Image (cartoon, rainbow, N blue to C red):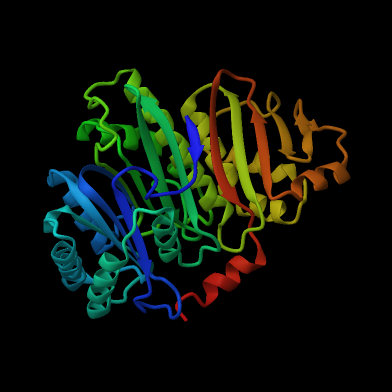
Amino acid sequence: MNIIQGGVTAAQGFMAAGVEANIKYENRKDMALVYSEKPCVAAGTFTSNIVKAACVTWDKEIVTNSPYAQAVIVNAGIANACTGKQGYDYCNETAIKAAEVLNVPTDSVLVASTGVIGMQLPIDKIKKGVELLAEAKSGELSGGQAAAEAIMTTDTKDKQVAVSFEIDGKTVTVGGMCKGSGMIHPNMCTMLAFITTDIAIKKELLQEALSQDVQDTFNMVSVDGDTSTNDTLLVLANGMADNTEITEKNEDYEKFVKALHYVNETLAKKMAGDGEGATALFETKVIHADTKENAKTIAKSVICSSLTKAAIFGHDANWGRILCAMGYSGAKFDPEAVELFFQSKSGKIQIYKDGVATDYSEDEATKILSDEEVTVLIDMKAGNAEACAWGCDLSYDYVKINADYRS
């Protein structure tokens, strides 16, 4: 597998665009398009929140019932959540307009929104934006770049990744982009993510691969404990790599799963590291746990701990907060068997063993915790299972950003 440049336009046959439609923001791109020259099989996972945005309901129906998808229209600034029948009708109107200008069936158009809950979309601006997107679409890396920038809200940077690998002597590419910075919590996280691939694969296998991989990637991210109404992860596969279609779980399927996992994990970590107000990506890695379930439970509990996140922000080796978060996670373990470490590019230091603190250097620990990527390594000494979760530190700026988000 090779890591390559680009995002959603890296795979053959995909085009993208980002334009200014003045949905909520001025003088910045706020609508995006992802388009395939050929029809795609589609898969998706969506928010676990009972309160779901109209676009989530629309997309679930398209992914489940439509034979293929060919375009995704995204707007940033207004979530189209808690907008009733009118909000759903606006999804339909958006799809109809996209179908008209892109010459594709209405039921092949997916839609996504991110932003403030409770506001109705300015549908006339949305329709005009769709026209602009159709005119601007490009298969160059610049098209993907524009789309990645257009879906941002409080994100400070665009998030893209792409990889390639070979099947049957054919080059297969998987690329993606996402947005997500706040209101992010495990169980399908809070985010929009769009992945494109030119692989030929059966729709049911594409959905299975995505649903399984989400459990160890996007579902292991938390910024602030809030699960959004709009979480959407879509994968489109147009088959233009011309490989023999994957119809069973064989070696080719495993190659694709590996590539998909890399893309998903990379995007998930990019979101965690760009959490609202964040100064550091905070990873918790649990090793030698008795079960995978317990490893995931403990890892999630630690990255969700506000006190631990605040300690990471302060570069404070307050390991007691980590043990505390582990203890209330619901997982069963022996605290005196656990070993804790901090590690980063500056080094690795053990801070807890045999039920007490080690004789570690506070200065060295602070140096390690001052890096932009920090890992808490938890050795359970109980088995062979492991899991990783990703989050960020909790800074003063998180409150500032969210205190006046609507204004």
